[in-house]
Image (tube, rainbow, N blue to C red; front, top):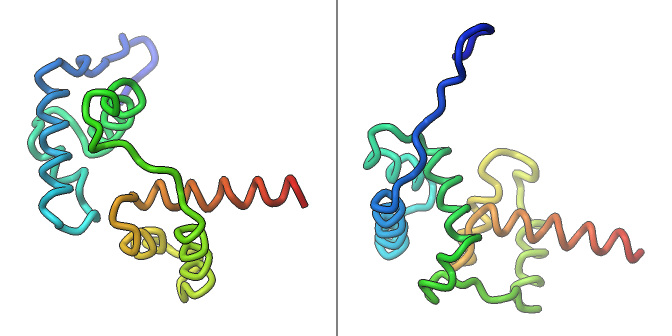
Length: 133
């Protein structure tokens, strides 16, 4: 908590060994086949001074930078027409549309995609469709 008149306290930057450990933990989580729910809580537990949100944000930053170049296994292929169709069907059939956890349940049908990636793709696709309508 920051108060006026006090210097801002910042967390130390992520170190190279932390980045390496984060990459290892993410790969291990993906290989384990465990549920995606709680992945960042489990990973953050390995870093005493980091939260789940910080671990998630750092992973996203690494992914955007050069993690994909270093590890081809992390590359995400483009969405196929079949995946788009399946996504449309799942969203239409979702009994809990707009409720928490909906995207997690839908993402379970797409083993190589996260709930965030599925939701972002759905929203992006619909924005494009509205612009061209």
